[in-house]
Image 1 (cartoon, rainbow over the protein chains, first blue to last red):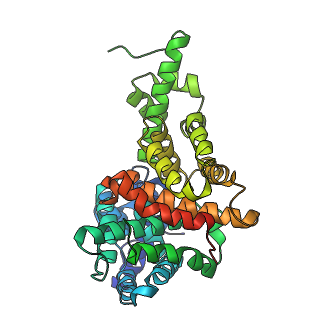
Image 2 (cartoon, rainbow over the protein chains, first blue to last red):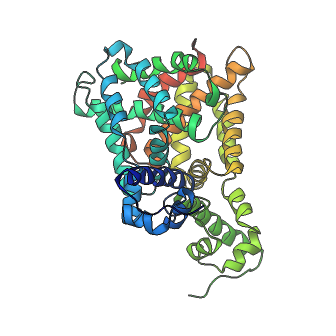
Image 3 (cartoon, one colour):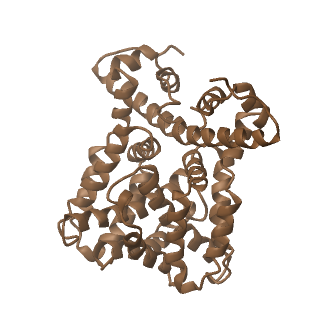
Length: 197
Length: 197
């Protein structure tokens, strides 16, 4: 099968999406250090030159591969418009649908799997935690209280995502969504609105 | 400085501990794929031949580097002898002391950072979740209920550990231990003994 090369504008979108998907998988599987542009090109079935042509450098490729999709940022924003008593459940459901989403899931996985070592991704993770949970002026008594609450909410949601989607540890990995919501939502609700001191 | 080589019995313990420490750091930082025996040897300031001599293969080195220290397994067991109403707090304190421990912390970090890709480490993580939290016959109504509870407890504890120690996201990363215990223990307590349905 002939390798793909730079084509007309339409093809460019298709190829760069294919490269990004391969990059997300490679970064999540092998980490930033363990990933080469050549390996990404091979997985995407394109020439390595094309990966450089589209993305410039491995750093820029990581940046593109871990950019939170707008569609996900939008659903985060929508979730936070829910009435406070429903936020716990809404946040669990948001996590479940995001990680199951064919476009959003691989980005989140790549972010969580590279954040430990790449300052740029860690900064993205920090912003996701802060921006997605902090828009909520209803929460907390002051700025620090809001940051603490959003950090604790994130700790539960991300721990659950690691267990279920990254490590695949049973029975969490295959629990029914409604069972998971019933079990976890009240704990998030406590972080959202109860006295933590 | 001359490189270390296989020495008398005493020295062997010192050198293999130094290699293990370097290996834990390398596996946690670069993942299994991104780690070479040569890089571990360099970080431990020994000959690569010595790493092979002591550990045989990269696979065996990972296995040794991610072996939960007996001292930690003992404190887990002790924690689970606490009265049920104190378990939530005891589990948060156990996590905090384990991750701050110079011997235990690096092992836990190496386990969490390689579990996504290495089946052998993932199996260890699964056993840690299962064995450390499942010894507890007090919890749950049946085997599956106990597994669900231990999985949820782990999701919160590990998410907190990732935020605080692996990703270093503020304010969770530098929150006072007592503040963290007050905030998180009641949520664990709910997973331990309340109705989750």
